Length: 132
Image (cartoon, rainbow, N blue to C red; front, side):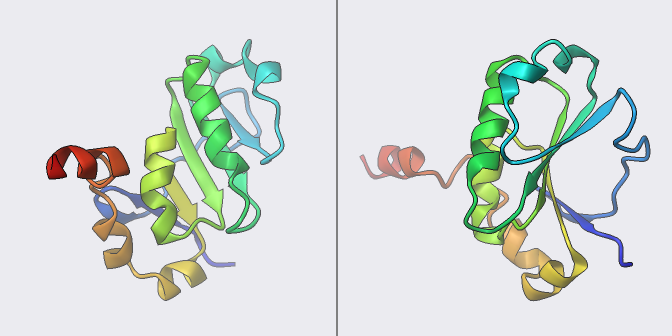
């Protein structure tokens, strides 16, 4: 089994999370999870990893936004089928990083992700303000 690739604003990185996802510090969330059921646990979690089962499933973006609105300040990672074109949206939704397979990293190399890493400057509202 090959190791997954972590995508951050600076490019590809190795996974530095070693605490696992079975203990009380981290949680794997399915894309259909209910955030309201997690509110009491949020202060104890250092990492939440949200699954993206397909490229077309955007529920993870909504989960990230809701988690941040509910006060979650820990590390938030999107995992699975996220495309480089979706990286800016993932960051704006509240994700700190994205975990992708080595196969996807080979098809969408690091420069495609880094190109979208300036996610604060290239949103629709920023382009409108710059044009005005």
